Length: 534
View 1: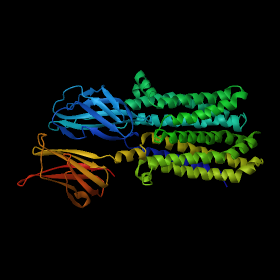
View 2: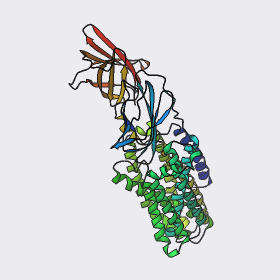
View 3: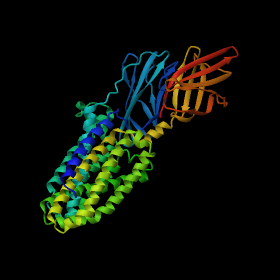
View 4: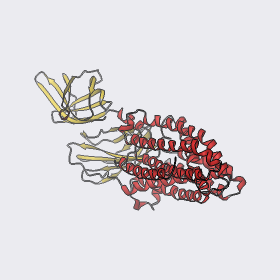
């Protein structure tokens, strides 16, 4: 039997979920385009300043802020750049002096999420690197998350509620004020979220929100299309309530479609390939959520007030919810498979952990909905007063779970999906080892634990050619009790040395040593740390 304890359990569950979201998103913000290659490589030591820099990502991006920080801490804006597929080529405007520099970058990915980072390189001898802050702006992040939740309330509970009133309640008054309030909430959150998007894109604090460049930047991202579609959908939802009753149904239907369009216009799921599949799936998923969640409050209030429209309202909702949920679940499964890719990613990534929280909430929600549908609905339609009250309380518990799901989904804004991490993990890790006697550029592909291929180019200490007689690669990790992995490299004929069939058993920081046999009487050994990804 469904009664008040469900509401108390759901309320406690909501509080726990909010805490889990905060814990899961405590890592620095990371978006969904992954950096896979840089030139110069991170940590490289160069004989002279490069004419240009290049950043290659896992998907096309647009630069937002590019800055070169000199060894003395002076920032130099980099404004001349070119886009070549997934690579950003940046002109170096000046001759750089010796020492360690920082190339700081912030770009926007195709899914509308900004991503930033930095790399170190040195001219001549390395020096103490300048400080570049990468602290998380918690007030800004909290505002972005809260704005996202409010926008979901406006779209799903507001526009979805307007559809339910027009099509399921046939214009009944129950829940009308709530729906109007949710829509107005969304109309405030949509433009506010656009400004917050601009702040996040440029990496500026909340105090800069009034600057015009912030709003232009937010509008120029793909999220700008989401906000535009969302405002139109919210306006249509409001119009269906305030306009002529004869036009309520088609206007509300257009608003419901606008919800799907808004969600499909940007976001990590919509930006995934193949987009001919992901965007329609996001559309269907969003429309399904709006249909289900939007009907809950009006239906619950109609049951609680025992209004005259409750029986036909409940009958129509009960008849349509099963196929809607089937589509909703199918679309969600497709999107989850594309985004997560492997079962291990469910527990090894923040995105996967949030998905597990969401799935747990959905199991609870579906169980509660099934009890409502097959145990209480028939009696409630027949007019059983006590059953109607139970069903109203149960729907209230469903609403709390739905709000918790909104919170979890908004948390995805700060997490890269495993598909993006997989692209980055498949890329090599590179290290430049520089000594007075010799130097080497080492690349390990892919840059994660497991079978890899190592490629090396060896040079003299002054960047000259080095015709070594033999090159040996030695990898060690004493803190894990792993004996050194020693492999003699072959020379394929392209000027490099190569080690095939190499297995790195565990991730973490390894020490790599390259033994270079210069002559029968001279051996040069150079070493450096290298970070192997999981």
